[in-house]
Amino acid sequence: MTIQGKRGRPSRRIRLEEIAARCGVSVSTASRALSGVGGVRDELRTTIIEAAKSMNYAIPASVAGRKVILAASSVAMVDSARNQFTYHVLDGLNERARMLGVELVTRPVATPEEETALLRESECDDSVAGCLFLTLDDDDVLTRAAGFSKPIVLVNGDDPSMRHSSVTPCNRSAAMLAAQHLIGLGHHRVLFLMRRGRRTIERRYEGWRDALIAGGVADFEDLVIEVQDWLPELASKAVKERIATRGLDFTAVLTAGDSLAFGVIAGIQEAGYSVPGDVSVVGMDDLPLAAFCNPPLTAMHIPMHEIGSAALSLLLDDMAHSVLPPRRVELACYLVERQSTAPARVGVGRHQPAP
Image 1 (cartoon, rainbow, N blue to C red):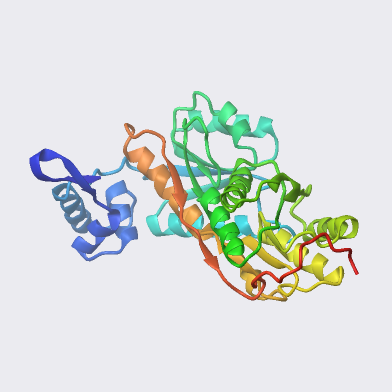
Image 2 (cartoon, rainbow, N blue to C red; image 1 turned 120 degrees about the horizontal axis):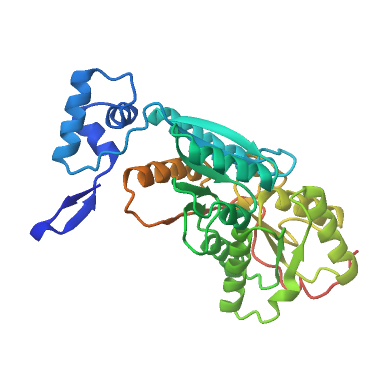
């Protein structure tokens, strides 16, 4: 979907929104017209197709009567006690599907056997145009998807071998920016609290580590706390145990997700310290609840809604351009400053005993 510049070289990529603007129609109408979906007058469809051709827009393969499968593991689905991240990703995905007139079919997969069965069914079903995978074990999916001929896009995951396209936030740089914000406030003993298991979370660990190394912190491994789940109460327990056994030997905490940050704030307060007076706390997600906890949480804003939207667009792009190589799309994140962070206090973070 490019236009030709001077001497026949490709220049700027033409977007569907530009086709819609040229024809004075909505993006969803332009999409339906170009993909063969019903609901568009023949005369208008012809006008839109001719405009697309004149602008060198590659008309996508028809999705009329076809569907996109969203395979979502039960663990990745919404669990408000842990995290609402998935809810917002799914919301963006469904909104984009409605706008483009795409039939999106959600299929829960709880076991590896169900993933295998889904792939086999989708391979043999001509009505299936491609698959989106929203799971917590990308490597397992990638192994089972070997040889699958239809487009696959990993949602909030990535393929290190680049066999399939994927969409994620810029996890590593986002965590680095969050840690740099704390270092800029004078914090050098910055704990990182995480739940291991996903490559996306490892990228956040790496970003925190990058910032500490650049800030001259050598013993950063001593600052990592791991929990077994995303439950706030586990984070609260972990930080209280740290304080009970080692004193307040840190001045800030960066967590791999907001749900852990909520627990950290509670644990610090229950241990007799204040946030941000004694300890600053930063989360990663910027869930709606972040603005309403006490104190309101400073957090890296992850574009959850846009992850879902971009994943579907990427899949449709793969359907339209079979010659395109797999791509990894990373969406930019930004810091939202609230009241859970403040400049480091002199003398805090020196292995003081708990009161």
